[in-house]
Image 1 (tube, one colour):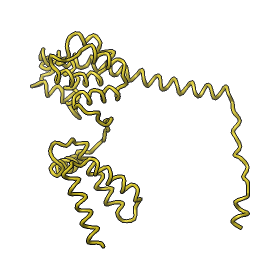
Image 2 (cartoon, helix red, strand yellow):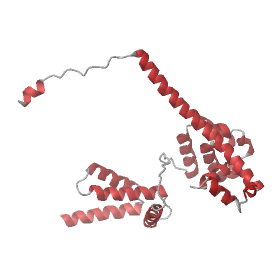
Image 3 (cartoon, rainbow, N blue to C red):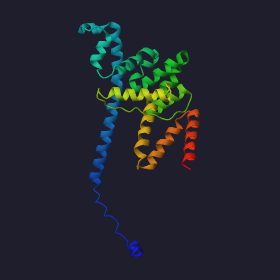
Image 4 (cartoon, one colour):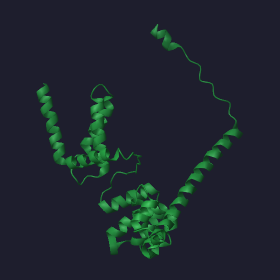
Amino acid sequence: MIGLTSLIVKDPPMLPKLDPRRARLVIEKIDNILAWENSVERNRDTKFVELGRYLCEVRAGQYWRTENLKSFDEFLEQRFPESRRKAYYLMSIHEHLPKQIKKDLPEIGWAKAVELVKIARADRDRFDCDRWVHNAQTMQREQFRHEVEKHLTGEDSEASDIVYFKLYKSQIPVVEEAIETAALMLGSDKSRGYCLEMICADFLAGAHASGGDPEVLLGAVVRSYQLMASEQRRRFLAAIEERNTLAS
């Protein structure tokens, strides 16, 4: 029966009738929406550069007094209730970059300009303005961020991305305590992203230890091992060898 069943040839699936006119219209709509999204993002980048300049002027001229506020920080708290960090990032663009760059800032955008600030502050008088402005203008955002990271650390580090989470205020203390505890265990020099990854890897190890997907568990363990320092790797392997000895 198995042999006969395997010999049955199924008819190929019926292809939908192609409407070329409708197909071109739909694809054109998709391309237009994507182009609109890119233009909106570029416009937002330009507006944020302008916003940083105005914020610097408000602070320098103490314009916040016209609203009967006590300080510039209070002014920022009203405009940036979730985090004032972004406001200070935008202002740093105008405070730390050379004057000759500022005319190119609208084209570069605030996200890349923030990366330029990191290099300008690190290199100081050695800052190669023309080179980095050219890179900012010609590279994609993630590629440029990667180049900046490599320049600052001297290492060709793994590409990264920024992930945003919405947390309720009642959840923040739990998350902060977990990350701080992980930092104490792993070393205070580790980034918050590294600490969060280790917390997630520990969760996956526990979740999959009782019958879950072993491949997911293996991936979490291997990734954790790769991120360990040499001494931690040695102790990790020694612990595995000791458990294997006890098991046998």
